[in-house]
Length: 84
Image 1 (cartoon, rainbow, N blue to C red):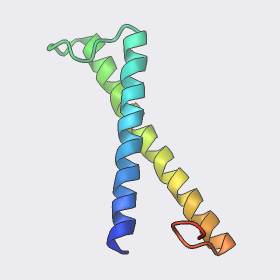
Image 2 (cartoon, one colour; image 1 turned 135 degrees about the vertical axis):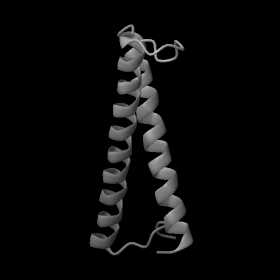
Image 3 (cartoon, rainbow, N blue to C red; image 1 turned 180 degrees about the horizontal axis):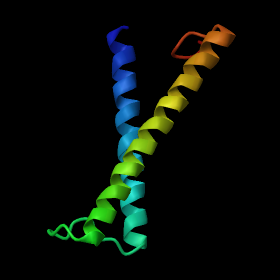
């Protein structure tokens, strides 16, 4: 695996995780769960749980999306980077 492919993998993983975690944080806020209260009550733990679940789901979605793109390129014979 070359450096460009590893960089693409890392950036898409990071974007998926961050996007999912932010959606989990927003969902927790809408449900009234305060993630950053400074204490570890039920509300904070529920918010932390949603952030973790959102991050994990976002990461998995990013990996599936990336896999689908690379499989589509293999099937059509296109080179990464598009046609010129």
